[in-house]
Image 1: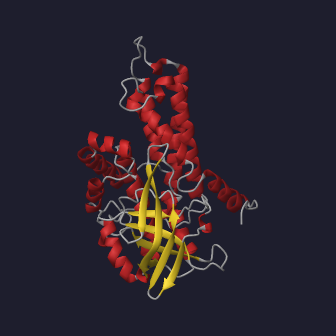
Image 2 (image 1 turned 60 degrees about the vertical axis):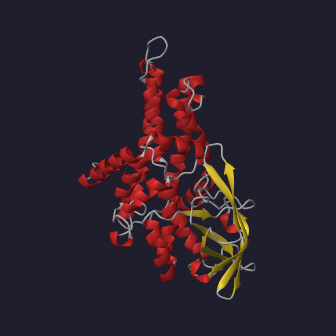
Length: 388
């Protein structure tokens, strides 16, 4: 197999790096570090103007007409350069489902503004009592003429305070089996009856709890058929489960190598120690495996081959190796590695410390490691499912 990149992908990488040099300032980095918003609205709109918010959408739909492999290269370069990524990555997940299952009126209203970078869409799946078992959702949507009345709450709705819409999973039939009584909605977060409360995380990311109290929602904001929400959600989840965190892995490698090549108090460089070189080599090897799993995903998407278990495999390996590599890097540089940003004693201005905190949560986001292992075991190895 030829792993050489096409001239087109090389050009996309170069354009992304030039874009980041223009837009990613020290102020942008500081704001993202201290706010944990996951999105910079100015940069997001600038990406929209280039078709980069939904890069795999056709140009006449506001995208850039990229292949999956080209989009992967674009997002990699933007992320490692410091472009806040959570907002754009997440918004693309429901956009795909809306394009496939939304009615004509909804698609015409929402998708152009999303593609232009004027609207963000957060995810409303998880609830306090259901965790990763999203099908156990209790948020209710009750029909009321040509509207729905929605009551309930969602947690881990990252950047909801900046988003225009939430892609909401709600229960519409209490008597149906839990996977059969669900419906997906796109709910404008400016609607009356919605409250958004911030939640700080260990990784420094701001997420939110969102409360819905007698929210009246027109039926045109329903995505897919009533009680067929699980089918719609599966499309979104498959898109979400393709993340392997190759970006963060590359940041760990770059940071620990900067440390290893810097002079210590005695004038010696850590890179001269065989133990240091071995650790960096192991990190680099893990990164390459994660990258190749991402390349395999893109190849399958671009050639019409079902992802199958490649998505869960990439997500599981990417997050688990990310955490392991962050731990190894911190162990390597010692106590200075846990000093936070802004302290002159911090290694690489606290980059490794921040990445380690973020890595802990990565095994939960977008499908926990437990869920990924269960999918691989049940669907790939034919083992019995742990849960109904």
